[in-house]
Image (cartoon, rainbow, N blue to C red; front, side, top):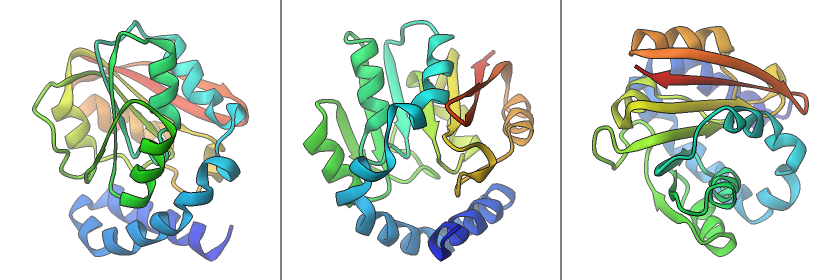
Length: 197
């Protein structure tokens, strides 16, 4: 792992344990992703890296409103929009640079926003996705409608710089009223699907 990737892993480990500490890291992480934004889609996004998320999406029903948290350049949001053209799809990311790229590449709605305090009403979405993203479990529970799905994927499994073991993801979601549906392995990565009770 590069120094930047090691830093992302450290931040993930700290913030999952103590979400309030995100404020200490948010500025640096945002700047890092702003710098990476122009080349992100061409160097780090591929069908293979999206395979775990695709496997999880295959097990859900068609959403009415979907939210991709930590959307980056919007790859997962675009995937959802292609799969379910009638769905209202929103991508949100703390990085203005990533959102600018997402808007350039896709037709979905893209907002600059912090995953630790999402700018959406309670129970707004029946599908919430995170791909290689730090999960703020309280916010995921808040914005997911009853009966809605949460799909969390890590494109390189434990080698992903932003990585939370799926057992931890499952336990955190279950504590917040989600039912574990399944884990998926695809394209060298892992994903978890849960449903709000």
